Length: 75
Image (cartoon, rainbow, N blue to C red; front, top):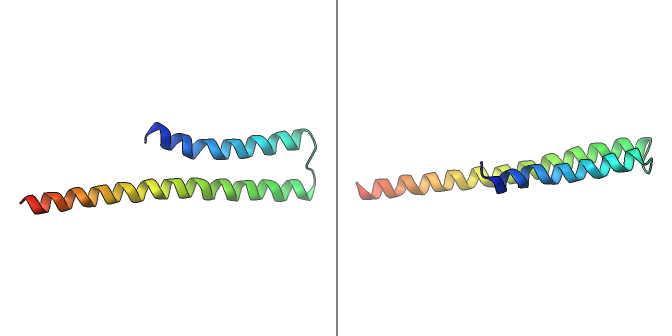
């Protein structure tokens, strides 16, 4: 994986959870709101990571398909 892809995968969840940890430690959120926000944080972080990795995987497959087509045309 490229460094930029790793940053796109790691950075958003890290920011989300850093904010949630800070809010939890400072007792801005507590009780049910804390549970709901943490669950939403996990869902959003997973969706962001899935989106980035799916785009990367799609691009890789597309490039591979194009290379195979070029090889087939050259023969």
